[in-house]
Length: 249
Image (cartoon, rainbow, N blue to C red; front, side, top):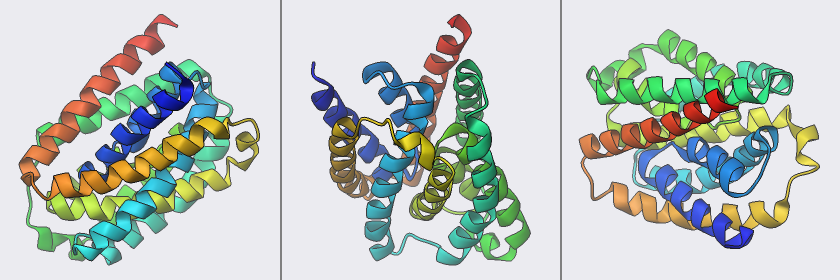
């Protein structure tokens, strides 16, 4: 199968995840770029930031029209993560590839378990916890910079379990956080973009944008609990695969 066809299929799946779940784009894009398209881990993390930033910004506009974006909380969450994301991006190039892969897998698995065992709290509490939002955002920004992920796979659990948001609002708000964090991390990775295969990244991104629109429509038909469980199960599967791969290198 040609690289372009693989890119189109992978992009469609990743866009669907972003549009429906508000995250999971990078956690799926990175392994797809490495294992299906032959990117190195460093190139894959940079390329995933490009793909996810563009796709998330597109999906964000649709969720905003549906009233599912909590702008104040999302901007505070994202702003707190910009500095750590920039520092993390500078650190990423100095870490061994196996360490990046294993760290990615462990964090994804932890987020999945947290989503499967949520501790619900009323949504109204989000506005009264700016300190908690900033702290969670800073931690997410650091992970975004080091691992080259938009952060939605961690932002959604944080918005639901730490800040008490309902799942639909967390999905829309997560896309705002992902867009800001991805752009901040890319600012520190500009030098790693020179050798990227744009002939693969361009169709990957185009398919992801189209998939995100379908994902938004799908999310409107599913319950918040079903979305949350699907998100967690996808994370666990990807985390297990990447952890095994890191151990056998």
